[in-house]
Length: 376
Image (cartoon, rainbow, N blue to C red; front, side, top):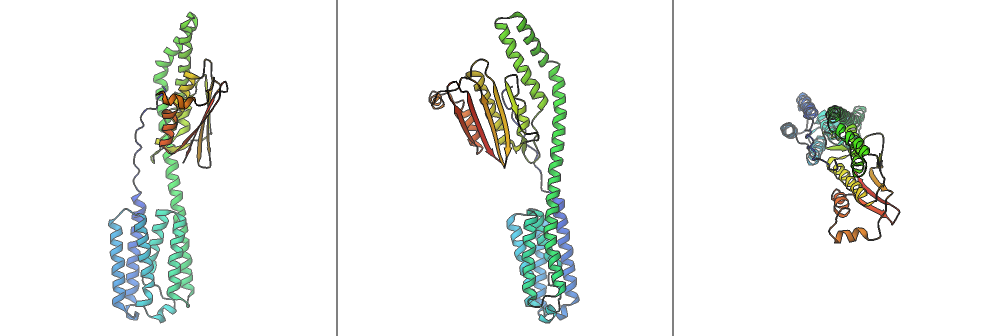
């Protein structure tokens, strides 16, 4: 029971194509609208052929984005740059008199698609920034004859960037909460199944060995005591259930450590889950198990251990403290040179591999304290 079994890789969560499909539909409809506005007033444009070329470029880019689902940062940057260029092209192809009277820019509402894309792909702050950039291009295009229609359009554009981004962030948080609820429910069902199976077999046998060993006495009593400790630990593991792994690859460290409780080991931590990437959570749990094994082997008979889990300001700290015999200064380094790598490899090595750090404090007769820290 002192090993962390291999975790099943979490299912990969694909990008939500439905959201981007809605953005693409909006982009296509606004392209049609911009083309309609241009055709309605094409005779008033100073350079109609140039306007057609701009619209052709907008159509080509719209088609490319509809066919290409991946929206990397580079794609979003190009999208925003082309949108700004389309807005500013109005200065070259349209009549200054029409611009002064508040006529719509050549791309019209098509420019909002880039703002929406940044809001959906990078959150409300990015959407707000994209909206401000497009608004600045609008102001450059009409300066110094900003009409009320232009101001209204700018305000609406900035609000769209912020509100759409905020709504998408709420949507993502809701999906995450739902995934956590589903994972917790699945863990609870698995816990109930394990509890029923183990209670009818392993736990009953361990309880009998403990009772019989105490009755016989001598070496059998010691075997009974060890069986009792394993029974308590197994009951704690069954009650905590399997680790909760979310679809995005995070695991609940609190659930992993909860199964280590026994008569000689007290585990305490926050009331809620402590989520870490599942590789990091598994490494921390394995390091804690190695530390508790050292307590059993080296701390002395009757030693107790305490495991404290803390989660503050993006820093997760696990402290393993015992009241055993402690260690002489330099004992860890000496053990490493002798080939015994319990702390060096099983604890410090594991945590270093996932970007954490380990601190060991010990002294003769003062017990040992091992502190593990990892950042989110």
